[in-house]
Every structure is written in C-alpha cells, then in structure tokens.
Image (tube, rainbow, N blue to C red; front, top):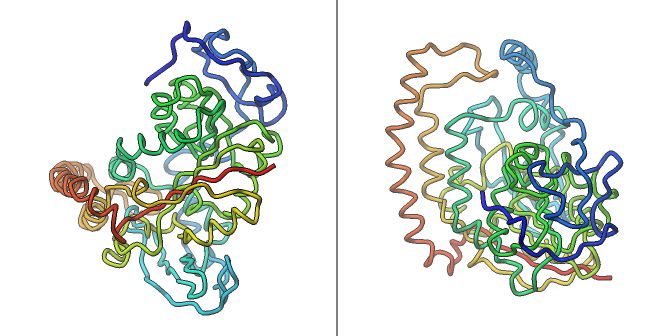
Length: 400
C-alpha cells in the first residue's frame, strides 16, 4: 500500500466541502492515520450496517440456495422486454445465449441488441429476487474467481485510469464508485498525492479502510447515499460499473448530485461495438453473465450526460482498452472442464480428493493463462488503435 507521509503538506479543506461526520451516511476514516494528516476531514465514525445478507453457516446457505432452486430459475427473472430499456426501440435481436461460465450457477441468459441505439442488454432481466440470488446472496468466490478478477484489472490499466484526470488539474476530493479492494485509489495516490481518495460500494469498504487504501468509505449504493454527499467531490469515477448496476440513469443522476459544479466525472465501459465481442462471443469477458446487465454504446451515454447538464470533454478507446480478452476467454473456456468446487448451489458436496484434483488442475492451467496474458499485452498497442479495442472512456464536466 502506498500511503501518505504524516509530514507531507496537505491543502486546506473546509469542513463544508467534505462529508459530515454525523447521520446515516457518515464515513469511516482510516483509523491508523493521525488527524493532523488530513486537515478538515471528519472525525472517525462507524460504517452503516451492512446491506448484504447476514452471515450464516455453509449448511444454512446451501439449504436456502437449493430451496430457491427447487422450482427452477424462472422466478429469478422478470418479464421479457419487448422494447429497449434505454431508447424504447422495438427492433431487438438476440446476440447470444449463455450460462454462468465462471460459477456454473443454474440458469440460461440471453443478450439482446437494439437496432436503434446499439444498447446490448440482458433480456429477460433479473428480477429483484434474481439480483439478490446471483449478486448479493450467492456470488462466485474462490481462487478461480480471484484469478479472473485480476485478469480484468492489470496494473497498467489501473495506472491509465488514475492518469485520466491529469489534463484537468489535481482534484481536491475523488470518490471511486464500487471501489472494492480500492486498487484504483492506490494507483491514483501515486499520481495525485494530495488528493483525498474516498470509496463507495457494497463490498470491500471495511477492508479498504483497514488497510489505509482509502481515506473515507461509504457502504451502500451511490443513488441511496447521494443526498448526504451532495456537492462534496470535484472528481468521481465509475470504471465498468454501469454495466453491472440495476439502473444506470439513477447512477448518473446521483453522480451529478455528488459532484460540485465544474467537477469531473470519469466513466469507463465495455464497448458493445467492439470486434472482440463478435469474435469471442460468450467467451468475451464483457459478456459474462449474469453480472453484466448491459453494454451501453458511447454515443448514447454521451447524449445522456449532456441531457443531465454535463459537458463531454473527451472520449476515447485507446487508453481504455484492457489487455485481457484472450486470457479471460481461455479462463472461461477452461472453467467447465475443472472438477466442481464447494458451492451452495451444488446438489452434492465434492470429496476431498476431487477438491485436491481441482486445485492441482488450477495450478496446471496457470501457465496457459500466463501465455495468453502475455499475448494480450503484446497485441494491446495494436488492438487499442483498431475496432478490436474492448472499452471506451468518457471524461465529462458537471455544469452549474
């Protein structure tokens, strides 16, 4: 962890420009930092109560999960849409059908394309019960999921994201949405050593605070927390968040509330027009289901930002491209070949021998993943300049 020196000069920050230390949205400060390090920061306070499911034993989780699956998975989905949820267009075409390739949880999922705006979305979408089941209560965890997550966020990509605001000056306070383990704030601290780096999200906030990776943390979703954070930040980032949230328009409105006039919003999303997605199909990381709810085209997102009073300052794909497509596709292709691990949605519990075999095979496939990762990085300078670039980045400034 790259921290701040207690003797380093910090710019003066008024109490009115930082989150209040009282109320349900009060942040928790890093307890290891002396108060003199960050003048004007609010006093330490407790995190709000967790929003996820309460802790319970493995047997109880398995019983609950299998009870929900006893009648299939149809009840986890809402009604199929006949119009695009972004623009209302009715010319829809199914792009692909897939399952949960990483966790092998039950269910089949379809992604539709809108001919009018290019929006690609899960159809039928998850119902509230499906969102709770797949995302909150029974997420995919373990070494395989950790390895896949690391493939999607290489160190070079984090540094590129941290530098995205360099042309616009050093922000005073930066809020990272769904910061998770706060790898981005750590990278941003190298670029902006005097910026207050905070995080918001439903998971990982407590650990990020304990490790000193963020200065203040807020547990929950941004639309719910935004009224208590109104006008507190002059920089806010959403990196591959809008693809996974239930309502992207609500997230954008919340971002406008949290930002001060003149503040900068940085958004990065997977590009539905990327040729990588056409080539790799369901093995493309951006098509991973059921977490990826949608892929928004850059033009539609820019138009929405302008409607909300933002001025789009920059758009681009070269810097946003993530060198991960081949390695992630290989990891997803190998996942169904491995022996199954312990998970609450399995109807049988694997033996110790099967778990040891799975661990050995995971280690044996690591060199293959590493070779594919090297190929991704070697090809990245070329692919980033072509339609194979897999992501785009938008920097916008909030109006008055």
